[in-house]
Length: 284
Length: 282
Image 1 (cartoon, helix red, strand yellow):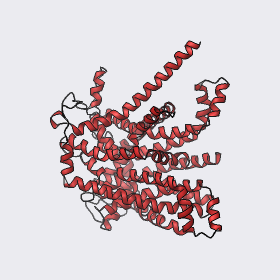
Image 2 (image 1 turned 90 degrees about the vertical axis):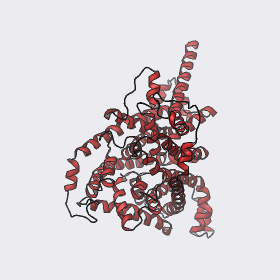
Image 3 (image 1 turned 135 degrees about the horizontal axis):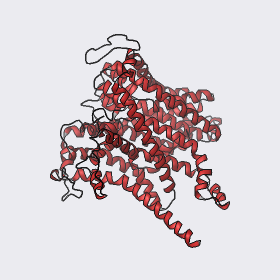
């Protein structure tokens, strides 16, 4: 049996763990690939200090927190709400569900591209449609604040279906008898939502929230094709900042240090995910 | 009272229908807009206000895109990467998950392994992308599909092993135990007893892997600059080009998206099962 595990283990060690250790080493080195083919020397924690004091990094942290915080909140509410509305087995409802999950299979780079056209302030469809409502649409991608809103819109568009799917699975696992007996006792639908569905789904929803938080923090592709981090540094997120630092300016040491700062934060969230999963499993 | 209840019901039903219709439109309209842009004449592309219904449909953007040798290479690269990654992942991960679930590991060890899987799924991938780029450079594998394939396998194998572990742990053990009593070899027990029972799970895992690999951008873009480029890089490259080229850009995005949407419609049941499995069961 142990032999079954070996190929997977070797691959994971080679492609994940080795680069991970390599990256920890890089974080302590001064090394810009464009000026030197090998490390330019050990600098201790200098890279970390440089990154922490970097204005773009600070802005990226703020942007990431803002984007992830708002996008995930909207997704959770919208996804759970839509799941409630999309319960049912009629043909129409099934078709609606199929439609609603489509954004999940669309490549994030393509979603970013598509919304870059949608949100173009002059030629895009969004402002054209807003015009019918008598609203003069903003300069979505050209204005620093609206560009952040645009990034949030795209994140919501792409991943609300994930919350919807998980919430649907959670809802369908609640036995109908519970709702029926609550209705017999005279409970309104709102009461039965608060007293039955919400407590039963709480662990699942919390887990979904953490999954979404982590994934949203890590996302890069859609920002790359939507705004390219712009205008200026307005939509630089942590991932995007590290990406440009490492693979555009080739400042390997700084990029690695920044990524480990990011990592420590993500690891905390992960430990929480893990703990929640174990707990909900032992509760079952 | 009865009348009030009836009215309330009508309002609730109407509200539900309205909300779901709006949600469907929010999904569909951008997609249709993309397809329209890919079929619009160049002269009707950049008008203010935009022309929504084109006067004539043209395939010139697709012809231009697909007649380019490079685009065809992106397409074949994407197909190569996705099929190899999917095949290898399914074989290696299914084996590993079966082995792990039947090794009789203590619960603490098993949860430690599960934590490692979760960690690999969710840690900031950018951390390893830069050293991975250096390793591939050292091995002279930069700008080859192999660098992309190995990079994808590093994500998909832990993820699928984790999914399949859930599947195998849920299977009833009795049949396998009976097979063991009858003298079946571990490979026989895996291939003839456990695997057929786990087949729907394997299908879900394969489908998820294919989507992940086809849509992946970060790893691919870090190791492939010219020859080995895949579709995701091609789509992303339009953003840095000077000037606006909406026609070819939309056509390229359509080429990347539409096969996946059709595939998703076809395998929807397995896809949904795969996506929810990890979150619901863990």
